[in-house]
Length: 347
Image: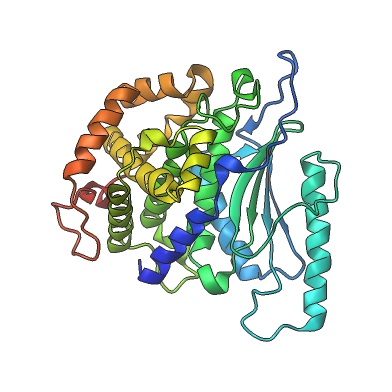
């Protein structure tokens, strides 16, 4: 992965605030619990008028490939939004007006799907955002992409996997306990912030590396060198911040870390390195992903301890020891003494 792509991924995670999305969490009786569907469910795309077909197909292909392997959850509605500052050429006034009208209509559709009863004008769809969210009444999973392929083409492969991981986390972490008191964004069921974002960063990178065919419309794919550099960059960022991933658990933790400008280093970078260690414990991406269906039944921490074979406090302690001795190997040949070398052959 080139320096440009690595910076692109950093910018991507910076604008993917899963934990702080607006949540429509109406109170729900135990006898009328709305449920997300798992299996044969709707994954529907909505685009602004004239959205570039090439990039729509790239995004759709990634979602289809990933969801076919790990399961369809939903109803999931994906909004691909073109903005007026996308075009590297001078804007045509007629096209600018068309996009403005189309965006307003698309925001109305978004609001209607979530039951907002509004025109959607509150939605912030500026270029560069890529995020996931949900509503409970009605149960809908939402992904919105406003990134420009002329600036961040690789995010039409990496980004969909990251955001769909959040859809999987939500659908499999759903339960009465999860929605009581609007705790969908808390750690009891969907997991700590470092897990939610860290697993999304790791899986999107590893799956992109494992599936070069997803990049068929690109000039390059996710190479082993690119994956290694990305994970070592994350390790180095986390080591420098000297703050444990255990400080990135709840919504309040997120807010505090954001005020300290440490969200990226702890939640995204540190979380991805922690999840890489968990992936190594399972031995394969398939076994790693088998954790998700256990969450709704057991709760996140009991499921974690059963699936990964270690208590959460013990994992925090072991992870701190491992990180303390790990040496970042960014921009170096990814040799066997690289702490994440196992990712080269992970299945």
